Image 1 (cartoon, rainbow, N blue to C red):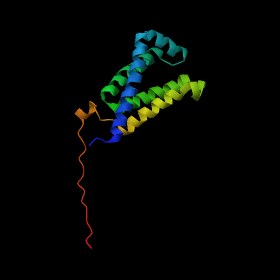
Image 2: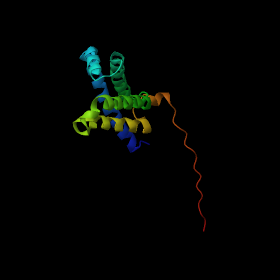
Image 3: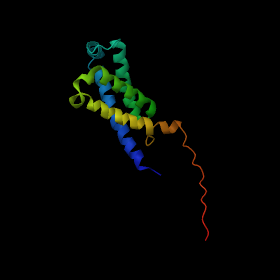
Image 4: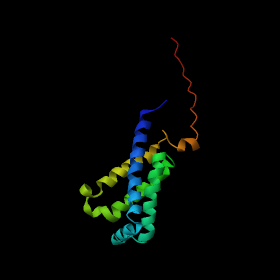
Length: 142
């Protein structure tokens, strides 16, 4: 039986995946060196490695969310990326016009980290359904 929360999780998973995929793709399309330069200006140590790491996590992580592969693991990585973005780049700008979008993405990823998403997900092929325990009901006789 399809639970309503699975439809909601699917929507969150795909939307979050598309957002991160596009952001990661943009980092590589505009030239990763532009991202490296920006990260160095923010004072991020090892900017070249971090830029490739963040771009890769966003690109592959977004794709993995769309297809439903390693949803919980990818969600944890994306939360880490967003926390890093807030701490290193957005915090000084404040909540409004600063890091409110990052907080929304963290909330979406946190839901997927906790609840997962198995509807139309590749993960479903690699994991087994938990077995339901038999329930014994006792009827009162009067």
